[in-house]
Length: 299
Image (cartoon, rainbow, N blue to C red; front, side):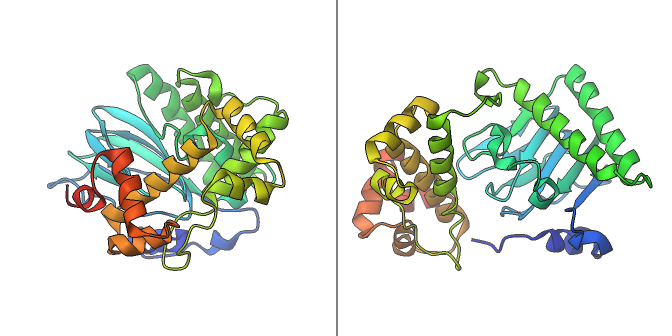
């Protein structure tokens, strides 16, 4: 897997400079225009994870590559990316218009965890194709961001934070289900949320974090200090999936990422994902995809 791109790497790669306020104690935020490209289509953004959040508003035909799917933008869209979701953005023509903002979790450290919002969750919707009316509703938010970031207002980061929240809620209201709405958490929801956070904390798999330790419902129940049956009931009630399903889906997602975007062999990937035998990993992968790991890697 390629090295995670830090926010410092982003500035060096794109602008060859690092802003002085990058280590600002209130957190970092910035906003940029997507400039039209003259001549050939722009180079694709490389597939990798970033250690910051990014919300992009774009016009133009594009493809966004995730671990196990490719989503095409035919006209215009807004996308949400975070440190847990690697991706590659491929522009198929010149960018006609758009903007993007970047920020880190520290900007929101007193305002909750950004990963509680479905647009930033591994199984959530991360890209939304927009109608002209939706685009015209969102574009002024970015215009306001440019105004605020360039202002001398002492509380401008409060305004910018609110504008980010506005983008989050506009997007989540586009989703057809009600799960995107924040509700007061009951006991089952708290347990399910802690389970999902603990599951996600094992990833990404890289050279510094080479083996998944929690592999089944009992492992997670022990860590959370609850009975495994209680955990299973809570997770099923909140997510409508079993604990085993969610663990398998997340391990499968990471397996696909490593097979497609790392140089590790199948044995190394098997070990990293907590399988004691390569044959167990092969059987697991084929059960869920109908392909062997090597065939999936070569397709």
